[in-house]
Length: 103
Image 1 (cartoon, rainbow, N blue to C red):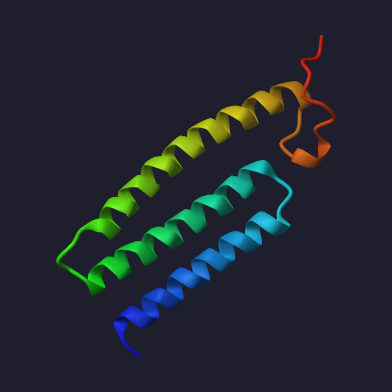
Image 2 (image 1 turned 90 degrees about the vertical axis):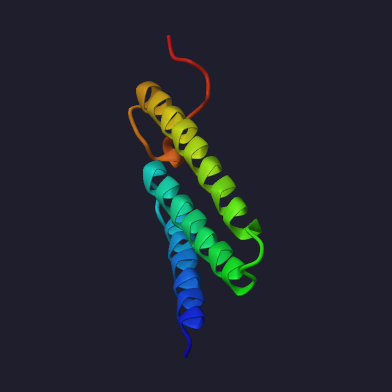
């Protein structure tokens, strides 16, 4: 097996692990971690696809864009989770009873 094949398999494994985390975990922070793992797996694959055609930098630009989106997603996601925890005293999305502010 070549190095590219092993790295593509690693990317597929990371994406599958992230998807499994998102589908099985109840905690909102763990769900965000699963999403970040899937984004990192896609970055790995973008860079590997770019290495197969080294004359262009499109894969690296897309990976940089994904990193920027992941940073914004993490910041907004953590802010939403902290606000929801403040109101509902739990970070499990299934236990959020409503989205109205409590008096």
